[in-house]
Length: 105
Image (cartoon, rainbow, N blue to C red; front, side, top):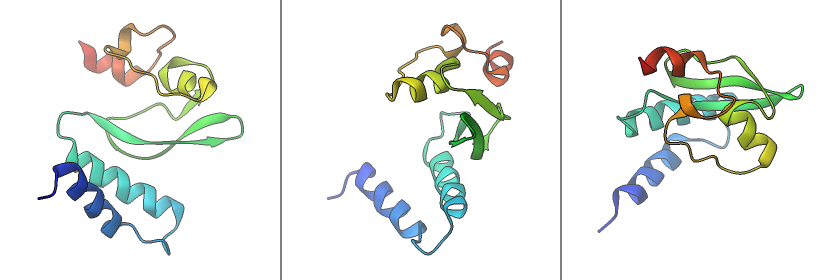
């Protein structure tokens, strides 16, 4: 018997094709994750370009288009090269994500 996680990983592997572009892969991955995770309001990717994190493919509410390294949760994750566990994003020091602020009320 397979677990849901194993089944989901296998579904994602079948969806992705090594012959596709990086952008097509990220688009399909974000769409798949958005479907798989019903309790989230955003899933996607930021790409490192010209010293900043730049918005890549995503599903969900509007997002910041550029995040400086070391700023906010995503910028801190990049600067520290580690996952940031945050219970309430809007209470995290340095968070300036407009969508977090707008959807919190």
